[in-house]
Length: 101
Image 1 (tube, rainbow, N blue to C red):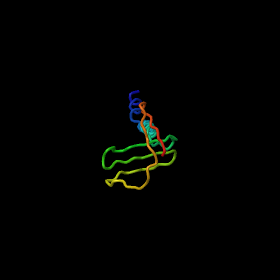
Image 2 (cartoon, helix red, strand yellow; image 1 turned 60 degrees about the horizontal axis):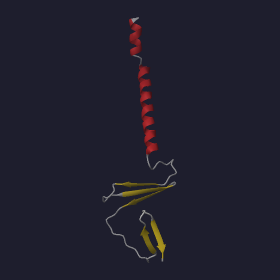
Image 3 (tube, rainbow, N blue to C red; image 1 turned 90 degrees about the horizontal axis):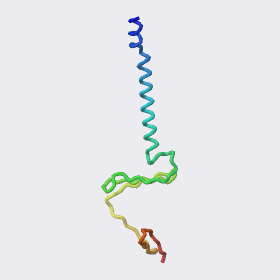
Image 4 (cartoon, one colour; image 1 turned 120 degrees about the horizontal axis):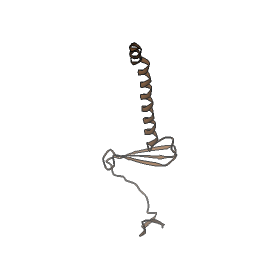
């Protein structure tokens, strides 16, 4: 009987079963990470992710439905032309009101 117990301990198929279990756990962890990612391709929400805020290499990624837009900051100042279109007022309760001219 002693020899039968030793044969079960040396069975190579048990190692394969343990590896399969390990890969199942790793796959489950990776799936949870994908679902928790704010830029998940399966979500239909609008999301904005700011990477490295306040630094020179700041990046803003905006997900609007299925469309992704990425903006990278530069050291240049913005310029542009235009005319004043109206005035915005902040109310005491925090709401903003835009009044066109």
